[in-house]
Amino acid sequence: MKNFLSLCAIIFMLLQYTETEARQVRVLSENITFNGKINSTQRKSVILQNESSKAKEYVLKFMRGNIGSSQDIKVCIGDQCYDPRKDLAKIKLNLEPGEIFTDLYIEFDLGITETKGTFDLHFSNPDNLRDVFLIESVYEVFSPSGSESEVDHESISLGSVYPNPSYRTAQIDYKIKDPNANIKLVINSFIGNFIDEYTLSPEQNTLLINVNDYNPGVYFYTLIVDSKNIVTKKLVVKK
Image (cartoon, rainbow, N blue to C red; front, side):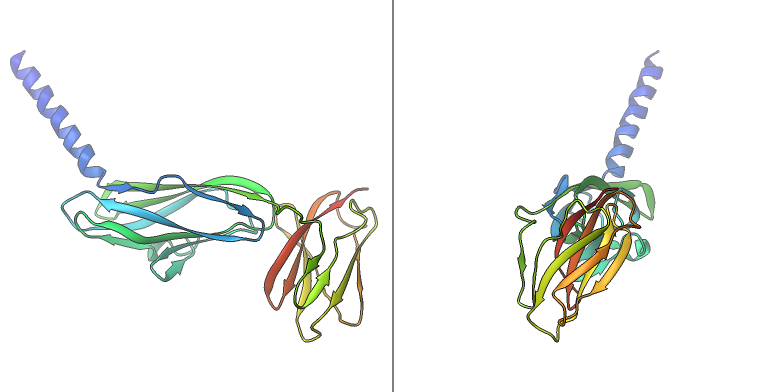
């Protein structure tokens, strides 16, 4: 019995040691939160600590969660940024013994629709598959207050769509101040799928949108000036 208890104690100590060895990096920045307006981009720092006495390398193994089609995410190491949906093998972290690593960032484009969700980044050590750590993120996207008012940009003044809800034709009044600017209006579905694109002419003051073929529901139209998103507003279509 004494030998059996001694063996159990040794096994327990080995399990504790193995578990400690497997958890060698601590994420000091827990629950990275992105909370902002439609069409905004946020960049958050992630701080890691290598609690082991050895130099470690970690590779992004996979990303899990719900990212909308109009949203974009980048993982940046210093000034070098990567798309975690395409560049998994390129996202590598090298941590010195005891190092507190502060050059890791997550850059998140919140997209064009009001929504909320989560995503996780899973890193692992190629030399020890049990040596892993997880970065957890949450986000919430909301419309800016006063989003229904007129937009007064240096290149264009743009009113809100009317009628809203629209049944057959939606109308938007505008006045272009800079005739050399490349100005477009892009319409996306509620989940971010492309629907229509219109180039605004300085020779006109009104854009007519035929919504007769649109399915009933919520759409978003985005004003783009010289390839830059200026504002996104909501259009409701009813039958």
